[in-house]
Length: 148
Image 1 (cartoon, rainbow, N blue to C red):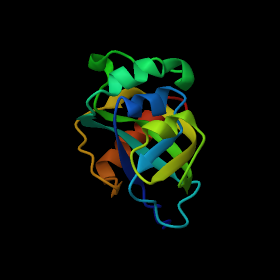
Image 2 (cartoon, helix red, strand yellow):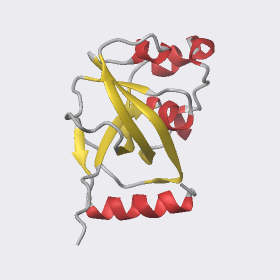
Image 3 (cartoon, rainbow, N blue to C red):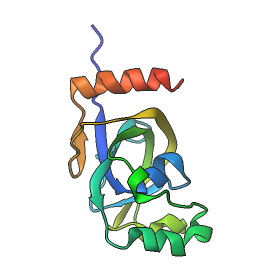
């Protein structure tokens, strides 16, 4: 019997999670880096409960540079928005999204795969967190429904 590869989740604060899944953001600031050998793996992307004070003002002021207009706060839902392919970590980037990256490391992703519907009722965590069997099943179904 083939062993399933571990599947990990990452929580990103809102609305940065929306910019990441539905917009041009491909770098996320963190205080940690994934373990070696994770490059190329898919990661579940969870939009966390937290919304940093002033983030919508910052996004509005930088909309042209970022090439993205933030949606209204009420449309930035909490939950699993999709999946992304992790590429590598950096300690500096010229990417304009790096300016909003809190943390000494930037996690760079090469591809994103938005789901058609947000998977609600999921509690994220700090760092990489193991995806439960139930969430894995729900993500597999959402992946198929999205046509990936």
